[in-house]
Image 1 (cartoon, helix red, strand yellow):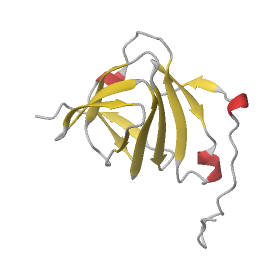
Image 2 (spheres, rainbow, N blue to C red):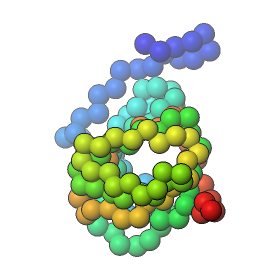
Image 3 (cartoon, rainbow, N blue to C red):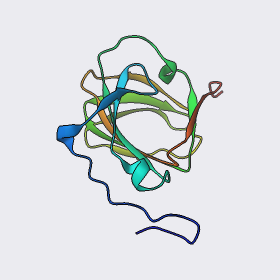
Image 4 (cartoon, rainbow, N blue to C red):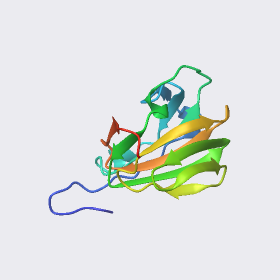
Length: 136
């Protein structure tokens, strides 16, 4: 188990699908299932499944933004989503696709399928999301 002299050891976590609790998260068009990794890693990481909830209202996801984090991995479980990344351009991610989104990479979501479902792992768990100016 991960631990240092200054930290508590990580804990075993089992998040059961049958007991999944889907909640409104940071983005109005998605709902989130926390997988318990934040508690299990003492906040070093967070892992959640994100799925489209059918809402059509806009939110800041379509604005250029960055995440203040050390690590962010996105894996598409179902459906697809098109993102625009600074210096990379448009990318459509489909079921089975995975990206390592480098820290502070300016990006925005362009559109997504109604059945989109994503696994996202981020470090640290208490990362911030900030809206930023569009890249030139």
